[in-house]
Image 1 (tube, rainbow, N blue to C red):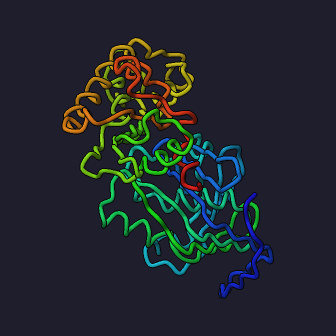
Image 2: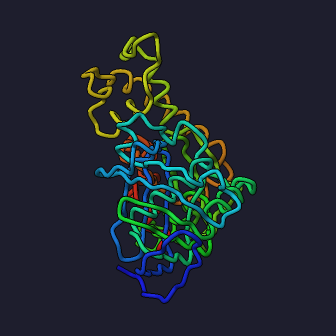
Length: 346
């Protein structure tokens, strides 16, 4: 584990700070629509489902695999006063308790809650200082970037199942999705022609994004395109014949259960035993063709100069048809689900 002991002192008011003090130079959190990934240099990337469940006092702070719960006590932020006194759970247990899946809403609105729980899960209790926290968003709209940065930067006093945590986040760097993944892939020799334009295609739950990069690693912003994600594919499947009437009272099928069935390869809707494979086989080529058309139209002027595009994100393994139809110009990244988080802490 890459950290250094410090003599950090904290003025925490009525909050009793533990004696353990740890400092991290950089921590990366890729708070995706389907999974939250947390990376520290020299450590395994921690992954939990991107689902939030708000808890009452009687719920306590539950402990469960691939899950973490916290109570936010206080902080010196300006951007998230609404968190004071709140408790919530992120991960698999949140999903089991019918929590809110991130891909269904605006990710920036829930990112502080995802980030706080994910950080608490990996850094433990005590007094923890993070020199730079790296995050990523699908676009760099200044208002959203400012909202997220002000919500997480500063000092936070948190109660966890493991004890008390005082978390100092000194700086917050927010980058576009794909930037850190490209950096990691280029350093690993993934691109056959690194001195040409190369790119990333990030297949996400709420949305996808395509981006070309100059040989220096600089993202050519005019080539950035936000695209429909796997959630759109799930919506197409939900209107098909396979899942008609699966929910009572005329309710639509739950998109998260469709996405779970795609992710685990069963193509079954939850534990119902009902397969939607036929509708997937019908809808996926249409969804993919629409994606390809949008990318081609947006990159038309750049395609003659472009070498390869790395497919990243949790759903990247599904994209073999795109690899084949492009004759290898599109390539599936190794460790596609966690490559962004790994690149954040290089």
